[in-house]
Image (cartoon, rainbow, N blue to C red; front, side, top):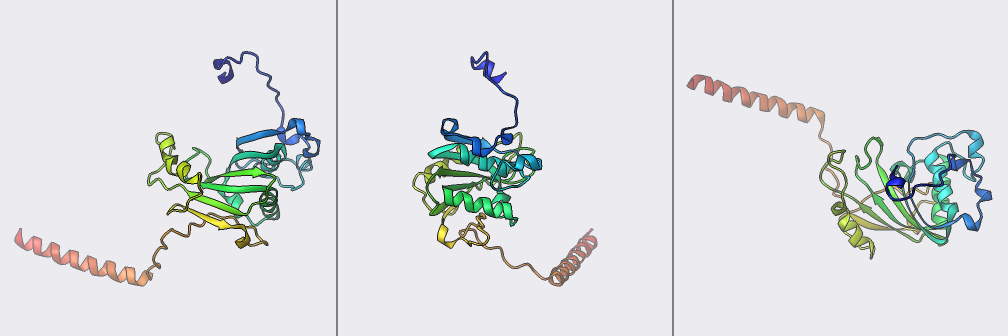
Length: 233
């Protein structure tokens, strides 16, 4: 319907499973200069479909990421939305895929989005920006802190991304942005988690007994105040 509204009255749409295509069959003519995608969250694929990929996993988002890398032309650019757990999952497939991504592409930017950006997703998400064909040397992270809850009636807007767009041009560092040298990445886990070094550490948790004593003290003070009020009344 959206295509008809835009003047495409006879769209060439094929109903198929993209992941059913064997990556080995993708030719140069099938590749693109730019890929922008929002991967499906939480989907599972059958074992026969997994055989089409060098890194086998039932997680559809991870299979799609391999597909996107494959269909990019050399020096092609991509912006991929994916759940943030991809950056830290310790299973073999996740570790192998992160290794493959940073070795085959320049993962130059990771945008960490606040919860609620995608209504109904149920997970936090990040956007991976990368160019194909050049290994990653440095990753610029930006943590989007809005100070408000996002939802259907309060969605992300263009102004929310203004600082990100401005700083990303030069990969500038700020309270919300920082750079990680790929040489500092653990080569056993390839953990790429969002860890803002500029975020103030929270103070140590108080001992529960100390909190209870303070509550008792406050209750006693409150009772004394109430007693004084009763005497006046």
